[in-house]
Amino acid sequence: MGPVKKVKFDCGILEFHEHYVICEMFEGIHLDTENFGMLVSLCREHFGERPFGYISHRIYSYSIDPCMYSETNLISNCIAIAAVVCTSAQRLSSRVEQIFCKKPFEYFYNLEEAELWVSDKVRQSLTD
Image 1 (cartoon, rainbow, N blue to C red):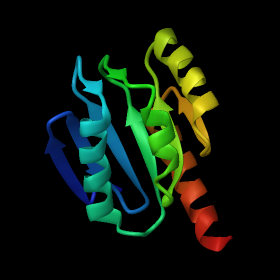
Image 2 (cartoon, rainbow, N blue to C red):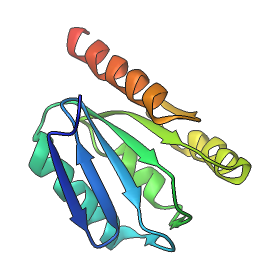
Image 3 (tube, rainbow, N blue to C red):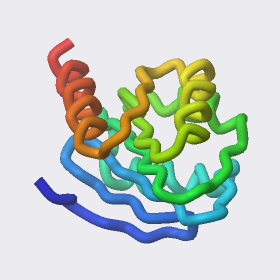
């Protein structure tokens, strides 16, 4: 099923689905507190307090301020995080992110697997 809504913002494109959002950051972006705040605001606007999952579709190369990992842990209705990786460097970065992230966090090599995993995690949270 396709996205419910697609939003382009300063750092990338967000594709909102029923239970998750797919984020594709633009090439060379540095995800810092300001950019992260914008991303969180857009997610809150769409999902409200409903549980959701976040999928980082890493098509392009960008950097992340390490402080963002602890910020992610504060978004109570974000149930799970998935990263879709294309390179071994992205895979290694994802493994480091898993250490800092307190939420379920997995990396995948294709978007469909990530969507299935995140959807399952969100559905499980609704029945717990």
